[in-house]
Image (cartoon, rainbow, N blue to C red):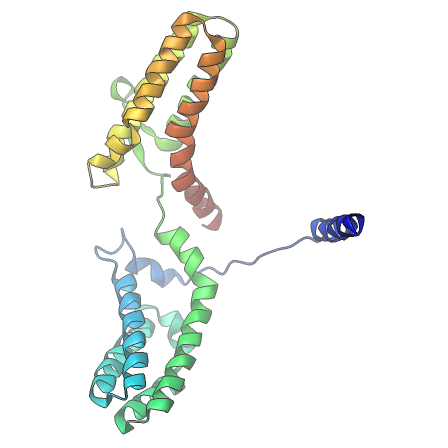
Length: 273
């Protein structure tokens, strides 16, 4: 029996691997960008979406409670913000389901609670279809960081583009690893000092995007400081094993965790542009 299941897994696994799967990502209309920061001072589009979600819930609940006055109130708000989608993004005007929006208005005004609930479900499916097509791509394009023009103050070396500076820090890290293995203590300490300074520059630069000063402190936290101190001590002592292990800790804490939040989205954003 175990052999049978193993063969099934092998068969279907091979078939899946042999089948090339392609996913097509739809690009949103260019006019949508104007409603997101930095083009807009406020997140106008998002606020409109939040209002629509809240209004749909209110309509559903008051239809169930058979409260016509409040049903009409929230239906009016919903229709106003629903139609606003077409005003803000003209390319999507024809995608709006005006027929079911009209039926919702009629149901609310006549007190037909079942019809109002049905119209709301239909409109909700229409909204979900658009979200399925665009929401993930829009989040990457307009709600993720863009480091392509971002610079970082590196002290004596002046301002540098983020990508170039990250490549430089990677070289320092690898230079340190190589020098430790080859017992070139002075070279390893020199690379460590430059990497340590670079981590400090990044921590101070966090506030260029994040407006809370504590963000930089959270990055260069006590754990990272302790790991850096331990790494320097291990290099000076010529302890290759300890230096290698601690360097791994620093790479995860100072590099990988931040990359998991920022770099993956930035790289994907560059591919979508």
